[in-house]
Image 1: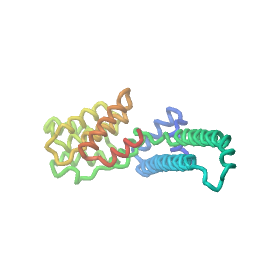
Image 2 (image 1 turned 180 degrees about the vertical axis):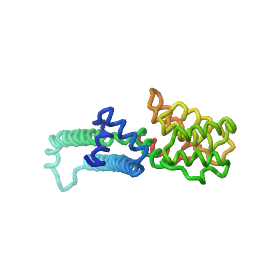
Image 3 (image 1 turned 60 degrees about the horizontal axis):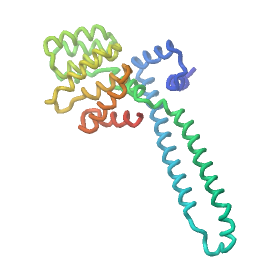
Image 4 (image 1 turned 90 degrees about the vertical axis):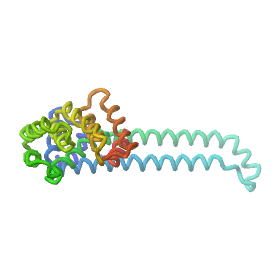
Length: 255
């Protein structure tokens, strides 16, 4: 089975629990696979939007056609035909609407894969597979060490470094961000959410990704109410023009 077939089965819910876990673990370490997943989901979402516009145009054209009065050249014959053609036209209209509706239903079923959680998975894998040392801002050698361990996929060791830094600098925005990300990569969602939430409270920052990252963590944790809470956070990112606005708009479009 090639990657595209595997992705299609993943997003349509055809994988077993073990296969799904294996795939999600692969996303954490394979940026090419994460990019392919993102491309697949976004292409389906684009098809959904195009189908919606096509459906609207067809219905508008149908309404326009039905609203046209008979021309004078049609004369009496048009009045006779109108006795049966109007009901027939409405029946035809109903059939078109029904067919369009059914077609949309099946298309929607196909593109239901464009859901926020999968986009969040792809975004995190694509953007946080590696951390650059420039992200450290030259704060400490320990922060650079933690980033190096993270890039080597030594997440537990990187977490220990970031945790130690948090005891020394509990409100350092870079440390909070990295500590949250490394927790997220280990599926320690509660810790990640707590750290991103603390980061979001830093109102003195020029650019703060805390709210957006907390939304991603909630989407990945996927507990009851997490999706709706994530939606509120994403809306906040958009309304307040916070870091991650473009991605937040993209995620909101899949709700």
